[in-house]
Every structure is written in C-alpha cells, then in structure tokens.
Length: 159
Image (cartoon, rainbow, N blue to C red; front, side, top):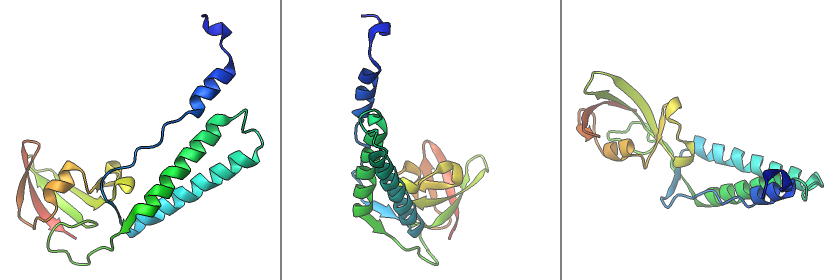
C-alpha cells in the first residue's frame, strides 16, 4: 500500500501506544536535591496530564495524553520508591551524595558527585551511584587507587 493512502489517525494511534518508561531495579536513592527534582518533574507531568484532559482534544491528540499519562505513572512510581539520603558532612570514605576528586593515570583531575539515577548528569559533574565509576569508588578512602576500565585512578579528595 502506498504511504499516500495511510490515514493520519493511524500514525496518531501508533504514537499513542507509548511503552512505559523503564524503572530501575535498584533502590531509588536520592539526595535532597534529587527528591526536589523528582517532585518538580511529577508536578510537570501532572500539569501536562491535566492540560491534555482539559483541552478537549483527547481524541485528536492522543499522543500528548499518552505521553502525559506515561510520565505521570513513571514519576508516581519514582516518588513512591524514593529513599532520601541526607549528605554526610565530613565523609571519611566515598559514600552516596559526596563529591570526589580523582586523579587519572594521565594526570587529569576529575571531580564529580555521586547521586541518584534520575538526577545523574555527567555533563554537570554528577554520576549515578550504580555507574561503574561510582561502584568502584564507594567505600574507598583518600589515597586509594582503583582500576577502572583498564586504567588506574587515585582518590584525591572526598567532601
């Protein structure tokens, strides 16, 4: 069948069947900032859902409603499973929520914070606690050396 003979409604119906956003099997550890981010994302999803319902165009714009419903389910689940972890003020070991500076084999320093999965953003200096980097460093102390991806890193500071 030629594409010219397909109906727009067919594309809309297919787009409305969005799969759920995957929910991690790991405990949902969050920093206080991460919890605030989840609450804001939930509020946005709830507002989008309300707007999609109020528009009266649910039959014409099923994609918007499906997206809003999917996001609302996701953030409801993530908020329900969130385990807030308050920061340790003077950590002696690498723990969730702390900021670490490491020195790589090539003498490049890198600083990042270990946070929850939903709040991780490596471009902004935060990595998920379940990432290979964080898992290799959790529980270690300043001066410890760790092999990571075939290269060595040394923990320079923990705060």
